Amino acid sequence: MTGGSRRAIPLDRISAVVFDMDGVITDTAPVHAAAWKRTFDEFLIDLSRGGGPRFRPFDLNGDYRRHVEGRTRADGVRGFLASRGIALPGTAPPDRPEVITVSALGDRKDRYFMDYVDRYGATAYPSTVELVHGLRGRGVGTAAVSTSRNCAAVLRAARVCDLFDVRVDGVDAVRMGLPGKPHPALFLEAARRLDVSPADAAVVEDSPAGVEAGRRGGFALVVGVDRAHRRADLRARGAHVVVADLSGLELTEAEVSS
Image (tube, rainbow, N blue to C red; front, side, top):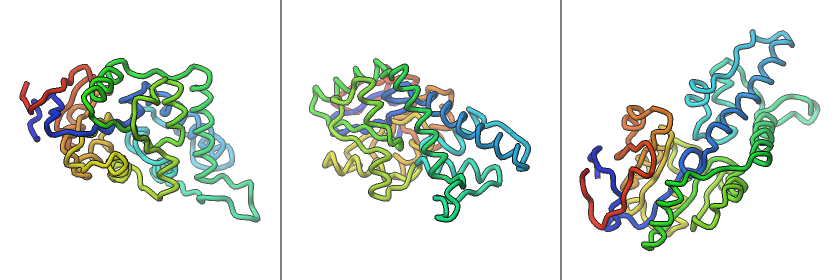
């Protein structure tokens, strides 16, 4: 299943579909980016005022996509700070509890993110909801996957919890020691819980790192959702199909070309 022209999920070959949450199920990717920006900018300003490097703000596009998107919270903190030549301990030393840590910055970002969700709620993409209903109506298993520890809360806020048979999120990643994307561990765990082989399942992702994870995991079909004008990057990282929105997909009983 390698043709880039295909715009179908062939149900004779696909028995389960694994959906990334932010940017695929829910319109929350920009909220994550904004929460990361607020977190990192505050930290970098304080560092500059304390004699550290000159303040250079976190870039919502370049920095978010290169260092944070699709990765676990801790990996995102470490990756971005490493790009600025900054290293922080994972946790504070017992004799210096005031030290800023990777964990503390991640916790701060989560608070900012959930403050927004609590205040404004979360919205699911109608085309995704329609597609999931169609899959479930035909007996296809569905999973929601996210590196966020707030995945369950966001799905509840968007009122789509009941649409997914399985959820694998940042809480599971920490508990089970699962690495973030582009490693396929989260997707493979979703397939395991759905009791399907990746060779009989599809992944739907909007990030290049997530697309790469799907291909590395051996999934039969990797669908890239191009909401951020990254079609070429999604294809380069291994998407079999790229659509602007999931309304561009159809369910078929056999593999077809558009």
